[in-house]
Length: 568
Image (cartoon, rainbow, N blue to C red; front, side, top):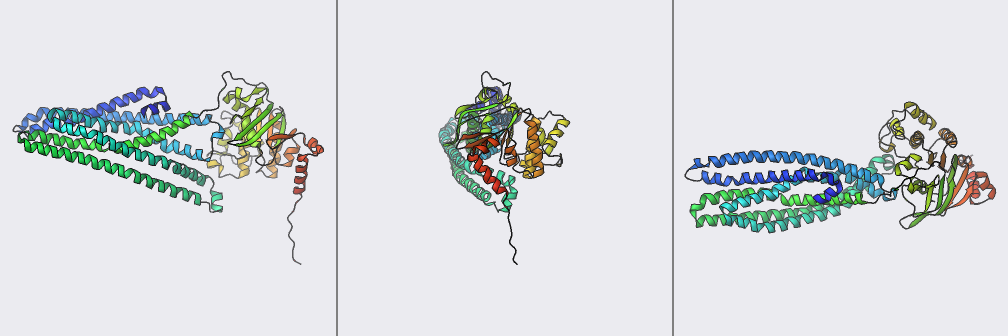
């Protein structure tokens, strides 16, 4: 367990864990010695000369104070190490998640990561914060008691020693039952986390369509899994508790037999039996501790699995392009067994607007994500200024490309906070300029967006995202359906901004609106995983190809009207 934890944290944490183990061991042994000193103390009290017990009492008092001090030191150090473990795990998970390919993420992973960064990290934190010290008390304190007991009454000490394998076997069996139950519970816990996140983010839709049933079902399934885990855990704990009490009863019976056999040994036997009662208390916690350690190990295994997930490789000798045209060379990419891009080849020139059109699901958004290297293509190559994107350092690539996603996510804060994410160091004038160019002038800068931007309309969220991209001022701008939720007035503002950007930047627009397509310097038609047509709008119309047919159908649709015939 400690080895796996150090693998997740890094070797620099090894000295802190060694100090914790040493302190916990010293505290547990001192506690055992203090309890063991009850034997000479009780022997003296039960003898004909009780005053002879003062030296034993003094030793007991000193050892008890030392044990309390050592326990306090171990507990304080355990809390410090536990807090450091939680911080480091959160930091390492954050770094790992930021490097993972976008294709790794799905809805289930979001719930898993939410649970991992809350419950599971806290469960692992419990190991140094509490469990190490309690485990030392459960193992070393009874061991010290048995060693001292052997000096006074070896037969009783032998009986307790022989019981150790039985107790260990039952405790291990109990812990394994808890571990198996927790593994089964994990899937329901992830599903519940997903549904709770969904319930919090999409209240308007859920309320409009009475969509609370999935959350209710997930909560019921989680409750049922918790009950199954409880029923799995309780028998093991009960069996361990009964076994421990039977061991104690057996030792007690042996002590009575020894007492009847040799009454002169009564003070020693009684003192040792009192000490045996102190043996039971720390050992009784071992089954629960074993279960808690198994749960922590499950959590740690899942955390390590995420940490070991390979990130996109970084170039050994990164290059940075000095121009910003984009080229796709026979790019192929798919999700699982479904091919999305099947030999895409095209060039997106610098200082111009390229409109990418195609049916929903054709792979337009996939092309933009591959350009930003959220994943690597299965085959082919994507180049910026002649440099393959996998030879550009990730930080450099992120600085070159600014994306306005179709599904806009805003962080909980103000409108201005979300715009500033584009460039946290930007001065006030640059921020206000980006706000104006995105058509956000009518929106109060200090207005709260809410989690995910829930307090703003779809058009407002889209404009905030556009302002964020403008503030970043990257040489390549990717706009994924930027005007899909805009009213005509703000759409005109955004289109004027796109035209302005085209003078100095590479602009790629996934477009559905006719005005955006007609103003583009180049139109790419994506169908069947390939670029099937390429040229200006007028050239494609003149060629009378599939694009021209779609255009005419859309032109006819623009003239549709809904009429109501009134009864005479």
